Amino acid sequence: MWHNGVMDESETPKATSVLTHPLDSANLEYLRKRLEKELPSLFDAVAAAVISANGQEISDQLTAYVRPDALIILAQAGIDPLRLFPLPVVIEHDPRVIGYYRLTLDWGKKPFYHEDSWRMSFQTMEDRGTLSPLNHQKLPELCAQMCAVMSDFVIANPNLTPQQVNAFAMAAFGVQVDGARRVLIGQQAETAVFSAFFAAVAHYDATHTPTLITLTNDRGEAIRITKQSDPDVCVWFPKDVLAVAAEIKGGTDRSNDGERVGAAMKSHGKIATAKRWVIIASGDAAKRALVAGVDAWFNVEEVRAQTGDDWDRFRYAVAEAVGIKPV
Image (cartoon, rainbow, N blue to C red; front, side):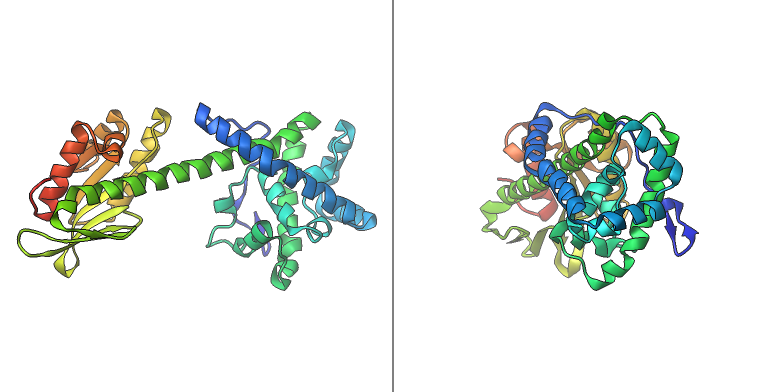
């Protein structure tokens, strides 16, 4: 995208006419409920903002921000250009609609508002519906960038139909919701596995909070087990000596095994001395993790349920790691 006259290709979003994503039945039900609840209000907000905006200003800004060839293609197809092109005059009436136009460009929320991006401040528009003086000043440049990308897309796809345009935001929103659900799955797994760590040491009068477990081992050493991020759970000896770094991956779909192992390896790559554990669902993924240098893996479903062979292996491994007798 263009910023201060310079093209930054690393920040350029890619708009796609058809967006596919593998969804299991649970994801589909979750997605259906979110779509029914949130997407109509987003479409309604765009329509209301367009109605509230000044018609002459809309016409002037379409001419200023959108390439003529793109406007001609949309006119011939009977597609309202305001379904694709964000204009300051529209967004000023309801800043939330920046989220709709972000979705039409198939750009995820996290990269769009990345903390290292000049666009980071615009997230308050989408999340809170507020337009600060600074964002109001920067809004024309943001709209110009987004319109330039969408103009290129329309010109490259001259046979666009209204049905395809209607699908843009819905498909991208579906992927965004699916991503949010996967984050939730990971968070639930981390909480359950941390509870399993506590269950493995509770017989030593261990104390715990949602993020910290403390106990004294057989050598009289004060042990801390912390729930954090990157890695997810750590076992600490006195003087902040790290004994175990555990990565937890809660997803169970085989299609994303490689991605989960890669994320675990990236986190473990920052650890120099500790034993590296991965608590993950698939045996195939675990094998890849072991090849990549992990010291031990445990099945996340059995550890969460605190039952089965891998739960037994896990609680014995935790006991050995902290220096106590297993339960």
